Length: 529
Image 1 (tube, rainbow, N blue to C red):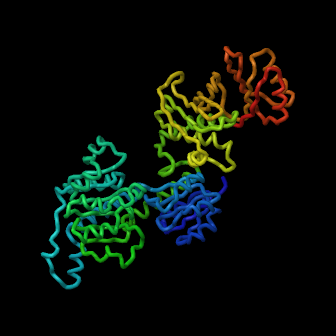
Image 2: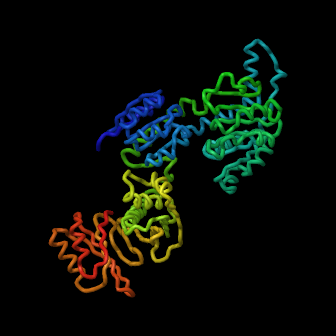
Image 3: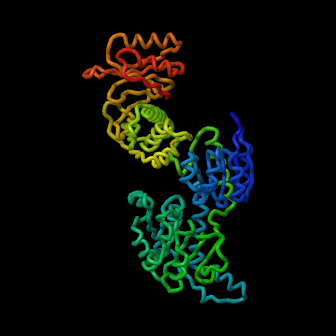
């Protein structure tokens, strides 16, 4: 195996760097603090880029990354990576979603307790030589209602610890079911209700177009006037100007922030002048344990992907447990082969590629199967490489809709069907994994078959007449082309046959032209599967 090159462009724990230094066939270059221009000038030589929050992976950087296969973020937030641009280039973007979880959850709770008991203000007062016991009377958090926005790894840890402190926990999360929340002891509510009921509010959501400025003037209007808010998630979720107004007007009692819309925060920012606002410089993940853990994790993930193709914690690839991924692999091969097959048939000016999964294929996951089929289809239509990550973006740009369908089993216990539909017609192919896991074609455009989807294949349509198969065999034999397998499907009503010849060597264009001259042959395609 040839060496792969890994660039680390932010500070990383020595333990993580050691993983890369000691990995076989890996060349490490450690260059923290690079500018965008510097990064663009060198990134084309690297297979992997490992970052923290400092490096901005912009579309310009992605465009210059000719060899890049994976971007690894040591931490959970990936808002400093242009994920759509990376995905269009087929670059896997990974993070370490659990490495900072405990550390960040503990920091949020520390901020909450400090805010409720006015600890930093009291410390500052004593350091100035004062004893102002009555001024810093705080509030208990036991038996109060804690509202959590975002019940991912960190949010769930906060909920668990808060329950240990005898708090009542309510939460908002767009993808958690009420049954699962109940199992965790969390009451799932709508955002407006959470804002109205919470004594304390803590945010553990990603920064997305939906969450940007989620906590705005309208949100503060709904909150209790003695409520306290903590944000140790991402800057930008809380509208900082609205927060200043809410505190100055007495709409809420205070706030603690570890993250800001722009970092580092302007020293003259009005938030820093408010007595009942605590600010820390993005310390959520800043413990020695967390720094080492995320560095080791992302280094191991990057090496695993580069050397073995293992995808773990990727934000632009469907995440699958190893046992599911292993069972899914044969269906991915089937789907890619089917997509490749229909991509080489007579063009239909495709507008939709529909992938239908039955049985186990549907249970394991339609989305990765559909993306594999789409990549197989597009690889014959694009000059640049395409893979299941970049395929949906390439299809969207070309006006091709990807439809994913899960159906009950019918003829086959488990199967994948790929159908392309356009203004000029339709092609449909169905496949299954063979006994040894090999992809097999069992139906094509209405013909029943049993052919292996691999290698070089001649596909021929002809009238079912004596002598056609013999003439094909003779012609190929005379040219030294061996037929390893042959399958024929027959439409008895029309008398049309569809035959697939698996051949051991490439078939030249002049040979294909000769095949088309055989009596009763209507079409010949040379397929590369």
